[in-house]
Amino acid sequence: MRSAISKLANTALFAQHPILKYHLPETRLLTQETFIYMVRKYPFLYLKPDDSCQGKGIFQLNSLQGHGFQLISNDFQKATVHHKLTKAFDQFLHLKMKRPYIIQQGVRSYTLNQSLFDIRVHLMRIEGDWKALGLVGRIAEKEEIVTNTCTRKGYKPVQYLFTKLLGYTQKQSEIKKQQVSQIARLASFVMSSKHRTWHELGIDIGVDHDRHIWIYESNVTPDTRVLNLLNEKLFHKVNRLRAIYHGNKQYG
Image (cartoon, rainbow, N blue to C red; front, top):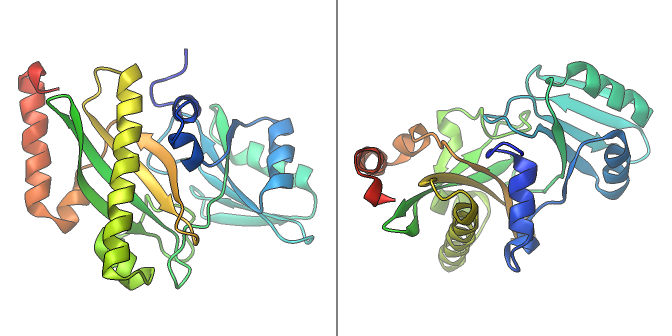
C-alpha cells in the first residue's frame, strides 16, 4: 500500500473524479520509459520524490529546443546541460534521493514578470464540511524552481497576486479566487472520502496563462506559519481549531 502522502496515489484518486480530472498535470511513476515518453510530450517537467514535502529532492527538466536538456536540482541549486537525454537521466539518478520518484507535466504558472508562483489553500474540516480558511500566493525568486523556499517577501495576499502580478481586474480576481477555493474544497472532500481521519489539508494550486486551474499536490500537515505572515488573526484561528480538534474528536 502506498503512503497516505503519496503524490501518485492522490493524483490517481483525483483522476477518478469527473471534475478534478481536468485540473491535473499528467503524472506518472518515474521509470526510464516514462522519462522518455514525458520528455517527448512536454517542454518541461518536474521530477519529484513520491512521498516527500517542502520541495526536497525536486528537479526540473527543460527541453532546449533541439539544443539538449537542462536539468536543475532544487537541493543542490545546480543546473547542468546535456546534449543527450540519457546523460540527463544518468545525472538525475546520481543526484536524486533514494526513494521512488514521479514525473509530472510542467505548468506555465508565472507572473507577468516571469516569476514562478502557486497558491496554497489552507482547509479544515468543520462539522463535516471542508472550509477554505485562507489562500496565500507564493512567488519564487527568478532562479528558483519551486515556491517552497520563497522568502517572507514572496508571500502575498491572493488578491494582490491576481490584480498586481497577473493583471486581473477586481471582478476577475474575485471570480478566480472563488474558483480556486471550490476546486481545493472539492479535492479535500475527495481525499477525506478515502482518508476519513484527516481534518486539515493544504492544497497547492497553479493557474496558467490561460487562467486554467491546476492541482499540484496536497499536504496533510500544512504549515500555519505561511498564514501568520499575512494574517495574524487567521493564524491564531487555525491554531485554535487545531486545539479544539485534538481535544474533541467530534470537531472533525
